Amino acid sequence: MRVLVTGGAGFIGSNLVEALLERGDTVGVIDDLSTGHAENVPEAVWFARLDITGEDLASAVAEFAPEALVHLAAQTSVPLSVADPERDRLVNLAGTRAVAAAAVAAGVTRVLSASSAAVYGTPRGPLPLSEDAETVPENPYGESKLAAESALSEVLVPAGVDFASLRFANVYGPRQDWQGEGGVVAIVSARMLGGETPVVYGTGRQTRDFIYVGDVVGAILHALMRPGALASGGGGRTGAAYNISTGRETSVNDLVAGLAAACGYEGDVRCEPARVGDIERSALDPARARAAFDWQARVSLDEGLAVTAEWFSRAR
Image: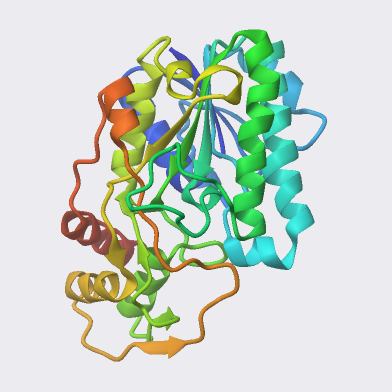
C-alpha cells in the first residue's frame, strides 16, 4: 500500500512510518520540521518539507499519489493553543481541511486523521467516555480538533472517501519531545534522568488515559487494513470517530511514581498551580475501535514507562 503520513517526522508519525516500512508499504512523509526531526525520516521514504497550510500541499500529495493518507500534522500543545488560538485553528482546522481537499484531488481512497480526547472537555457522563458522549471542549486545542472532525466530513463525505477521526488519549513513548510541545511523560522522564526536579501542575490527582505509542500505531495499522469499516463507526454525514485509548484512568501522581521507579529517581517532586485549560479527569472507551477493526491496547503502563525511560536515558 502507498501511504502518505503528514507529520511523519514527529513523535507518533515517525513511529508509524517505521512500522509501515517494516510491513512492506511504500511510504511518503510531509512535515515542516517545526517540531519533527529530519533524522526521523528514513532514506527509503519519499519526503517533502512543507507546511500543510501552504500552497504547495496539493501538488506534493498528487506527486506521491497515495492510496491512503494518515494526517498527524498538528499543533498539539494545550498551553500554546491558549496563548495563540488563531495559530491553533490555522494549523488544526484549516490545515486539516487542506489535507482532506488535497487527498480528494489526488484520488486517495482512505484517510485517517488524528483527533484528541480534548474534544470531550470535562466529562458529562460516566468514565470511560464513549464516542457518543457530549463534546464540549474547554480549550482552543480541543475546539480546533472538534472543528477539524467536521471539516474532514464536509470534504470527504461528498467525495465518497472512507475516513475516520481517531480520538487519541494521552499518547507517550519513545521519540516524544521533552521540550516545546512535549507531553507529561516525556517532560518528567527528561527531568528525572537529568537530575532535575519534576513538576506536577495542580493536585496531581487529575487523571488521564495514558496509551503507549506502539498501541496507537497498531490501531492505525489495523484501521488501514479494514476497508469499509471506518465510515461505519461514525454514522452518516457526521463522520466516523474512534477512541484510541486504554479505557483506564491513571492519576498524575501515580504516573510520576511509576516514572520514578522506571528512571531510578529518588528526588523530590515540585507542585505548581494548575494550568489554564486542563481538565480534572479523562478516560475513553475503546470498544468501538475493537469492534470495527479488531484492535485493543496491549502494552501495560508499567511496561510502556520502562521502555520509554530506557529510550530517554539513551537519547539525552
